[in-house]
Image (cartoon, rainbow, N blue to C red; front, top):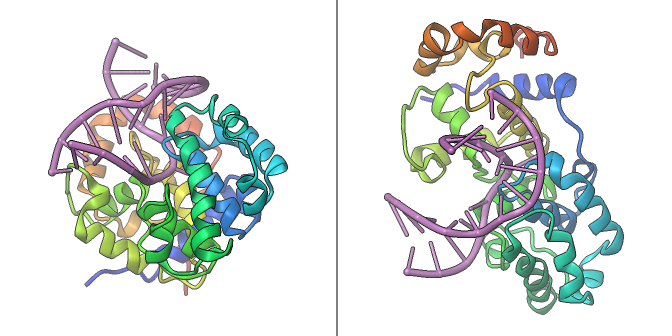
Amino acid sequence: MINMVRIQPNIVKWYRINGRDFPWRHTKDPYKIMIAEFMLHRTKAEQVVPVYSKFIEKYPCVKSLFMAKGNDIKKFTAHLGLHWRSRHFIESVRYIIKKFDGKFPDDYDELRKIPGIGEYIAGAIMTVSFNKPAPVVDSNIARFINRYYGLNLDGELRRKREIIRIAYELFKYKNPGLFLFAIIDFTAVICKPRIPLCQNCPLEKECENTEITLCKNKITRPNQQQKKQEGKKYQKLEMDSE
DNA sequence: AACGCGGGGTC
DNA sequence: GACCCAGCGTT
């Protein structure tokens, strides 16, 4: 059996104190979430902020983007790389207008049919915009699940059945959209790819990561100085009692 | 299941 | 230099 009683409240609690703030976190509008996620595709969030803000200013809704010229849209993605993504901005709203009369469906499988929307973005819209659980798995969430439950899987973690199943269970939280933002920041700052800050982790006690002992003994020891400096910014949290 | 994509930052 | 980033479409 999977133990996940305290995971979400603790990650959310950590997030309320230490989380990052981004403009797309102040809306539930599925259009804006979609635009943000298109831009965040393999791209650092900090890099997306100015581009997103200007884009939403110019194209605040589905219809305004539908009327836009392709060349004008390309100017926005020019500084983000992966230029083929500009197709998504154009074709997604065409599809939404044609098939859904401009209104986003609150259904995972229907969202998946929109050009440019894959499993992750469909899940993000379901949780953030519609407050419904979905199996949202990005590379960070996959890494967290693999570590915390000591699964020791390797390869393409995001597509492993077991990881997707656990992610779905995790997102059956009362506020799945909030949990998404929280776990994204938590995995970016604490349970990060290299040298996770285990000593600042509110979940350390119940974490079954075998990688951690390896990390503590071998990898992080030469970097104690670095870890201490980073650790100062984040208070260790007590476990939730609920 | 594996691969390419890209500018921009970090280590 | 090597590696990573709120993934997706293609093969």
